[in-house]
Amino acid sequence: MKVKICYLVPAGQSREAPLQLGVPGVVLVLNNVSPQALAGHLKGAHAVMLDFDDAKICLVLPARASALTALVDGNRELTETYHHLRKAEQKL
Image (cartoon, rainbow, N blue to C red; front, top):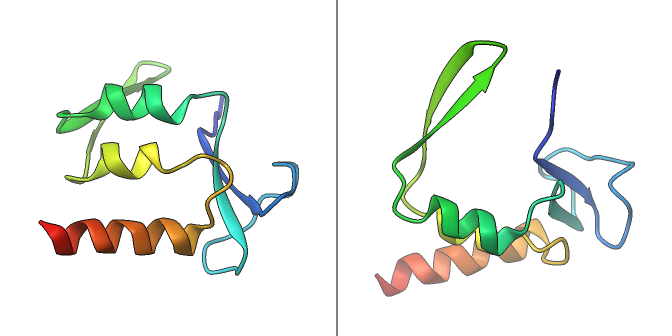
């Protein structure tokens, strides 16, 4: 079973029409997951374990995984998310 947890969609559109990276006007949408709840779960985590039909996969998380996830609200365009993270990195 394949489950997608994040989609790229045209801003203001439903997730029925997924897009690819690099397309202008694209927003990130989580699939039935609260961005704040997921960000809280990822905070301080170095990796997540996924289990697909007994195949276990360990995914190493980037340092800002929690901060990035919190920005995925279904309204913020991908470029805005990128610029927000760049500004945050410059303050560190």
